[in-house]
Length: 331
Image (tube, rainbow, N blue to C red):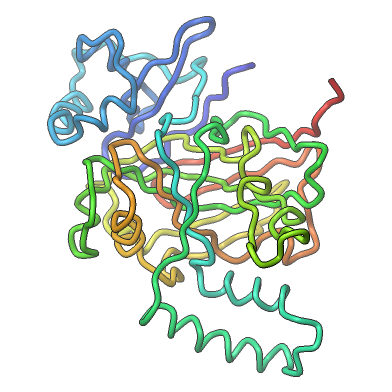
């Protein structure tokens, strides 16, 4: 695959990524806005170091990374010509669903019963009130994703032949930097080391199982095909993001804007999502937490992903992700 050289549009002085030179093994890289990268295996003297390994020692290594980002004496490499992989290989992936007000309302409108006597306007008003009630009284809705679905930010996305209604879902993803269990919302963000871009692709036709309607959604089938979670390009340290609840998300399909929203529209904040997950699960460094997708999905527009489509995603200060869809070829 030909390496892609994207612009480094990041907040702060540095970000982290996983990169490789042609025919060489991937390495954890310190990336700076000037378009240069530092091989951290060399800079830190740890030949077997991985990006996940950095987050396993985040509190210890962060001051060193800050210093390296401005050290002109180090052997910086040009980003051009390097392949950009998914920035981290997570052990666990947690995904929040129905977490943006307008998205949740639109999806409820689409899937509401045919015999609902309310007008669309009445239903929207009722649903808006329901979103307020959820935020005040309920808990986030979270399910589990597969690390094997994660792919690079510029890799092609293969659309499986069985996927009848493939759709996009741009999401802000948080990366955990400390072991965590049973956190309060007030302390949860202290355990988030950084943020990155995720696109949580979904086969809309596979969400609901007709053979077992009482069980509900089939997230394995509809979201976890190989490559259905393009990730990155970079992980930007949380200290460089002034307010993760005030970031703008934009997804363009073939140059046309589809999703265009702020994280302000979240029903449950990132802190509440992390806290909620930690009440049940033991979070470990490098875990990935997807925080939901705003309105503007293809199913709302009658548009589905097709062979040759190009998705370009941005989240303020986190860089640009660009992936091309290719239809699965007969084996």
